[in-house]
Length: 189
Image (cartoon, rainbow, N blue to C red; front, side, top):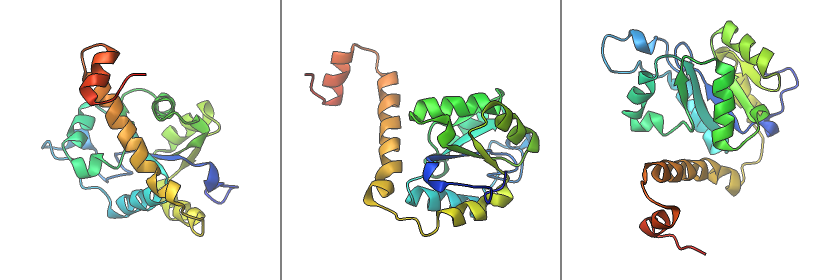
């Protein structure tokens, strides 16, 4: 589906990016080192532009989970993505998990993926999700041009990042809810 086919940017809350062939040119698991391939500058700029407009970004990549560990080692890159999914599961399942973790409808996602197969799998199993080829990213950004950027939309990505950090801290804490609230400085009641 192209961006021109009745695309409504108002319904988009999160753009989900594939890694290999989309965020970067190479295949990360084939790298001879632990370094990740260099991200495409235009894609990073698009992610940052969308974030400034209150649109979240995530990752859905069919690859070895170790790629996510390598991504975690690059804080400036990892910080751009919420609820990333890197595994061998179907993309449609990754998108369901992203929507669940973010607390948004699956239909509020857009998938950018270089693979026609992956886009077709998502379109078949999640017909409410818009899928785009990386070549469509300029048109995606153009669809958001002229839209009002409110203070609420500017702060949205930061709020989601804060919530993700809170969940991660809560998952690491090994005590009761009350002990966690005391430990974190929150009060009960």
